[in-house]
Image (cartoon, rainbow, N blue to C red):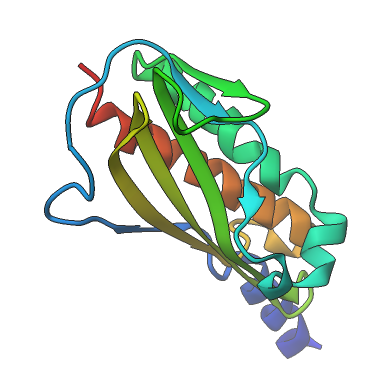
Length: 176
């Protein structure tokens, strides 16, 4: 019995943090020029290829797609960047536009055996229709503290919020 209790406590505390995984190019993939003013970001991040995303994520974890833009806006505010979620981003339009695609999202494990979740996104920054730069971000989480009391979508939501923060940090690099 003592061994079972120790195992349950260990599962609760395993994988307590999300890990940041930026794939930064040494040089910008586009013009690399600075931007100023508001930055439009699509409020709903599409899956690049929905077929590679696990069906349970697509059906049950609907907030994952909207958390990225909401978190980018919130974290942009703390960095003096005006990030504005909009229904649809036109990358060819005037102004600053960010398009985010979810490349992959994986949800294995659960509260009893331990969470193993990750998400990979690619974000593109356009200024007046020209690519400034893009970034690939990967976040992984084992559920954090008290993971045994969290559902799979809660852990994925946490990851998507951290990715939004990562995008705000990246955009700060280009903001005048």
